[in-house]
Image 1 (spheres, one colour):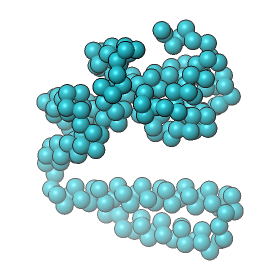
Image 2 (image 1 turned 45 degrees about the vertical axis):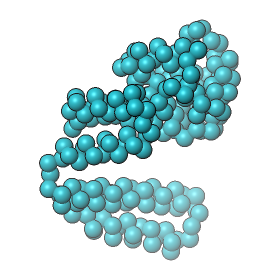
Image 3 (image 1 turned 90 degrees about the vertical axis):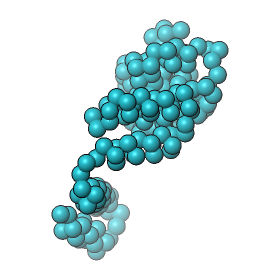
Image 4 (image 1 turned 135 degrees about the vertical axis):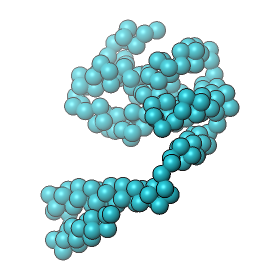
Amino acid sequence: MELTDIQTGTLREKTLEVAKRHKASWFELGQYLYTIYKDKHYKTWGYLEFETYVGKELHLKHTTAVKLLKSYYFLEKEEPKVFEEASNADSSSQLLPSYESVNLLRLAKSNKKLKPEDVHQIRKSVFDQGKEAREVKGQVRKMLSERDDRDPQEVRETRRNSTIRRLVVTLRHAGEELEAGKLLPAFLLKQIDELAIKLEDQLE
């Protein structure tokens, strides 16, 4: 059955039902989420943003919802055989890799630092060997480190600066929100700002 044949009200109810058991049926939830995102059904339900819809109605993190729908779409476009088997109502959901593992394969396939043979090995780990997402992630990291011909010190500095920049941005945004909502006294807001400045001074 095509999701386009489902009435929007029924689609909304079915998505909520599947979301409650998505760990046992992530493929089905990914299918619903992809349709809702692509056709912007959430707007007809009173939500301006997809992120708001999945958070308030389905109680899903936006990052999780995006991984689910992208993993579903990846199988549809890149792994037609796996997609067909997963679409079969008689297939056991236990035979399908987790959406986290499929998402790691999706990201690996678009990573220019990885060679085709690397991606093939990752695919084998996901579909043939059924490795857990943490194992696949470790495998990808190892491959990337082997492909990185930069000096170890340079790699460390790049990672350090990137982490500091992310922290500075987080502090700035948090400070603005706290100040706007008058949620902290002025002296603490000043300390947040001063910490952000000190961190920026550490960038190399």
